[in-house]
Each structure stands twice: as C-alpha cells, then as structure tokens.
Image (cartoon, rainbow over all chains, first blue to last red; front, side, top):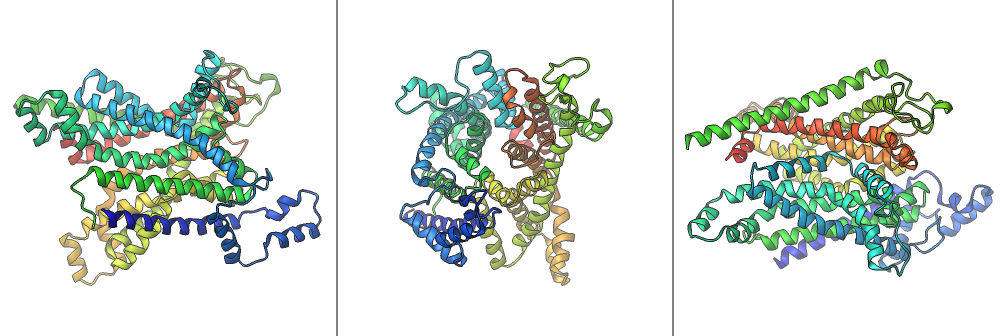
Length: 314
Length: 286
C-alpha cells in the first residue's frame, strides 16, 4: 500500500510537470503579445520593445519557462496584466469561493446520490424507482447552465426567495452566505446526483442478488442490517470511481455555473482571464485547476484501494 | 418460478424497444426539423425588426421574438442544425483519431501501447472543459474550432474503449490465422479487428453525441464557440440572459429544444444498449 501511494504521488508529480510545460507552451502561442497588452492601445513600437525586453520576452522558450516555474515553486504566480495585482491572493480568494460551492455540491451529491440509489434499488420497479429514474434522466440530459437559468427565473425572479447571483461582502452572516450559495450548488449537484444514483442503483441491485446477501438473510439478520452492513459497502466501490470521475465534471460545472450566477470563483476568474488575454492569469488558474483535479483523482484512487481489500497493489 | 422468468422477459423486451422507439421518434423528428429548417422557418433566422422587439409568443411568432426582433421559433429551428452538427461532427473527430490509435495500442508491442496510453493519461489529467478552453484560447473562437476542441477532449475515452475491445479480439483464432498468413498489420487492424469491434463502439458513439452536444453548448454559452448572429442554442441562451425576466421565452425555447434533443438521443442509446448487450439484459432482469 505504501509503495502504491508513493508511486501514485510520483506519477502525479510527473504529470503536473508535463502539464505545466503544456500550459506554458499553449499560452505562448496565444495571439496578442503580452507587451502590447501592457503598453495599451496607443503604444509606440519603441515602448512595446522596451516592455518586451523588461519582461524577458526575447529569451528562449526554456529560459522563460524556467523563470515561470521557479516563481511558482516559490509561491509566486506572477502578476495579472489586467488587474495589475499579484495573482496569488486573487486566486486564493477565488479558490475559497469555489471550494465553498464545490464542497456543498459534493456533500449533496454523496448523500442524495447514494441515498436515492439505495432506495430505488430496494424498491425496484416501484413508483419511487420510476420517479428517481425519470429525475436522473433529466439530470443527465439537461445542460447545467439551463438548469441554473431556470432556477434563477423561478426562485429569484418569480418567487423572490433567493438572490440571483454574486456573493455577499466579507463579514456577512451564515444565512446570507448560504442564500447565495444554495442555488449555484444545487445547479452544480443536479447532473452528478443523477450519475451517482444511477451507478449506486445498478451495483446495489447486483449486490442484493448476490450469494452473501442471500446467506446473510438466511442467517436471519434484519433487512436493515443486510442492506446497510452487507450489501451497501460492496456496492459502493463502483460509486467511488464514479465520484472520482465526477470531480472532473464538477470542475467543468463550476466554470459554467459560476458564469451563470456571476459567482466570483476560480472558473469565473479563468473565463475572465481568457476573454481579456490575461496570459499570466490564464496560466496560473489553469495550473491550479489541473493540480486540484490530479489530487482529487489521487484521493479517489486511495479511497478505492482502502475500501477494496481484494486489491493488492504491487 | 417459470412465471417469474417469463414475466421479467416480457418486461425487458417491452421496456427496451419502448425506449428505442421513443428515442428514435424524438431524434428522428429533430433531425428532420433541422434538415427542413430553411424551408419551414417562417422568417430568416437573422432578420431584425425594431418594431417587434421582445414580443411574447403569438400566432405570428410562435416562440415570440428576441431583443433584436428576430423570430425565436425560426432561430431555434436553425439552431438544431448547429447542435446536431456539433454532436455528430465532434464525435466523428474523436472516432477518427481515437479508433486507429486504440486499435494500434491494443494490437502493437508494449512500447507503442505504453507510449499511446501515457499520452492519453496526460490528456485525461485535464478536466474536459479545461482542455477544451485551452485549445480554444489559442485562436479566435468559432463553431468549427469548438467542434474540434470537443472532438479532441473525448479522444482518450474512445482510445481506451477501442483498445480494450482490440485486446479481446486479438486473442481470437481468426486473428492468429491472419498473422500466420503474414497479413500486414494495417490489414489485420482495419479489415479483421475493426469490423468486429463496431457494436460496442457504436453504442459508445450514441453516448458521446449527447456529451458533445452538451459540452459544445457550454462552450458557446461561455462565448468560446459559435459567434453572433449565429442561432446556436448555447449562444442564444447566453445572449438572452439580460431579458430573463421580461422575455423568458428567448431562453426557454432553445433550452427546452436542447434538452429534448439530448433526451431523445439518450433514450435511443439506452434502448440500443439494452437490445445489443446481452450481459446488461441478464443483469437487469436477473
């Protein structure tokens, strides 16, 4: 197990290095010279050349990459061209906001997804099962930005229960923050609840039909014990994999949902940077998002290994 | 006991084709509407009219008009073309790149296999939307570029599937025979293995089309796909957001149309899977 963890960590480190080179290379071919962006619309060629020299844009690719990577390793993500501020603090605030959203959504997904999956497996082909299956079908078929807009329309514009977007200023009470987070996180969770409950249902149905469940029932254990202690732990393995894949979806969903709700998180920071050709900001936020994704995958792998005693990693 | 078995069988055969036919009906009508859109659309999709701005649905304008006075019904109809183009075009791209790579990876030596799969690992270590956004930041956005980006995003999934199918088929006797005949690798890959690999690949394609439609629409929504005055559904929804309260029909029409399209294709895909995959049938009906 320890060697497995060590190997996974090393491989993720390698992947992150390769990713950083890729991200740097891709952003280097972006149209729109950085120096020109800084100098502004009415700059003379001399001014642009001076800024280019100052930023070291004439250095070879690997020197520029080395400088950028060294800065990141020291915790310096560079300066935003548009906001003219260090990126680090801007991104960490955005990261906090996104995490608030993602964690709320993830908790909903885990509880609702697994719960609905188990319930519909127990009541197979009953009205509840059909209801859940209709709901999950909508969940995977309707794009999240459309859900988001429908939610805004219904809960914010028509009913006036919740704010349509944004986030309150620092120091706001829990209720105010919650009222801003609830609609975006439900939007984010919708498709994923569908995924997870579909997966849980199908593996739970298989588990309930297995030899060991039949044996547990034959021993005279209560149905509750059979379901929660015997069937569910085994049925959860594929669900963990789906939850891991869903972290990727969640990140994509975060980008779209934050745009819909004008929510100041990582995704909105990235889109903002792309729209304005803010190169250092694009590089930094992409790298941060990719790093989070890799770590989430690592955690999922480890959980899988932890919950599955059958797996003996070499 | 016998009754139980026959009962589940009846249920299965009834449910599978029901999905299949319903999905086929929805998908078929949307494809037909998309193809006939230029003929049946009552107005040109980009015809503006200041006099009819933000009008609610009426007999003259079934789905109302938008902020430029354009007919939302006509625009939604034309949007079906873009959406289907995105879905099928992007899937075609990921298959054109992914299937040959997957066949090669599953059939070739360890080194080639390792090289291809590590490359795919790198592609997969980006969250899908981020990979697409990175590709799209390089050039000014357009629908065709978004289609290529979506296609590339889903290449690794296709490579993995094609590889695992190939690994299985490569063990078969007729492949050993082809090797003994000294057939070329290309011949074995495309004439012997590929024809046998189609069924799982086609089922996967159905799923990929809906993913591609949704991801493509998300790119358009974020401003990284189709550009105005195009009536791409994602773009229509994005453009209509300021008028959400005064003219909700501009958002609802393309949103419902897109959801219906994806539901139709998903139903069709589900039905197809149930009909083609005997393993799934037996595990579902017990």
